[in-house]
Image (cartoon, rainbow, N blue to C red; front, top):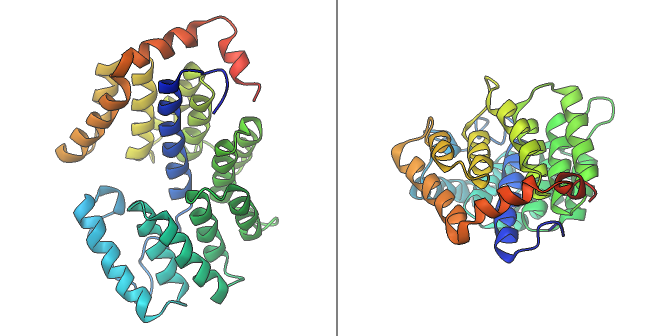
Length: 278
């Protein structure tokens, strides 16, 4: 975590932001196969992002049974690993993808999913290498480039990460997931004003999803504007999901008046410049 933000509690907040960044970026790597619409993989009744914990566990169990029947199938393996990661079972997801990658060493979708699993498990350099192998220079995939940026941010390489996001935007201009990841990169170095600019741009795009808006809510809340943050957090979510998100925001922002400390830090002359040197 950058040295420009020194308090223990602030570091805790930014670690949460980093987790949000990596989840958004790697979820953005989803393919049609990832979404479980192909072959014999069990179909889901609703988007994964809209499921509650019980529904996620049920879907994961169904995919697990399909994986046991055919552990070499790339579609089943990728889908199962994605759900395992969403349930917080990163070690198991990585083990699944290791087996699938052995059976499908040249499959681009498998390599991308393997890289996601490695990143979620904290194996950042290995994840960069794996995603690099999934990339094709003649037809680069902006989702993979953005995912590389997220991993670089996790490694503390902010400048390299932001260049990757801008490379991705050259291919896919105004893509909300990329803009959101770029904004969250600035959160990680304490430049909340710049972060908000990118996140508001991301949230204004027609294809922005709830994860982008939750990132915006976090940054707005970190600057002390909690009523607006709560309003953003409640948009287009079920009451239960909105309550859970608001409770999470309150838990992160209410202790020790942390958002006021960050806002004061952000107003300090030269703070933004110092945070961008990492």
